[in-house]
Amino acid sequence: MNEPQPVTLPNGLALQCDTCRNETFEYHRWKLQTTGMTFMGLDWANRDATCFVCTECRRIHWFHLA
Image (tube, rainbow, N blue to C red; front, side):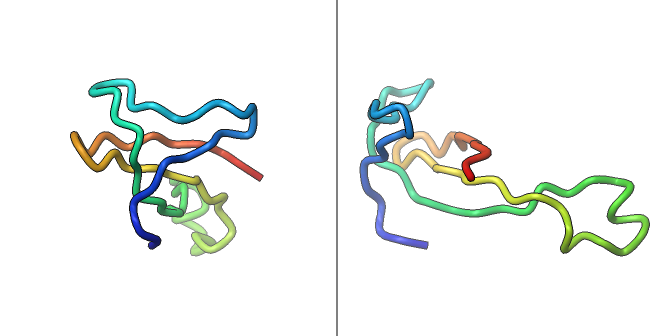
């Protein structure tokens, strides 16, 4: 995890929290678990999500960024 900072989206706009309008976020990558892959023991093959957590209200903003 990096230090909280502003985030620029691929379209060039600054990310702003939908809840509190804060512009500072923590960066995380989380695995998107699916029932089928978990059942087969293939959790490692699931996709990752790029997540930005608002430093004010803690809302999680999920993205699928390549």
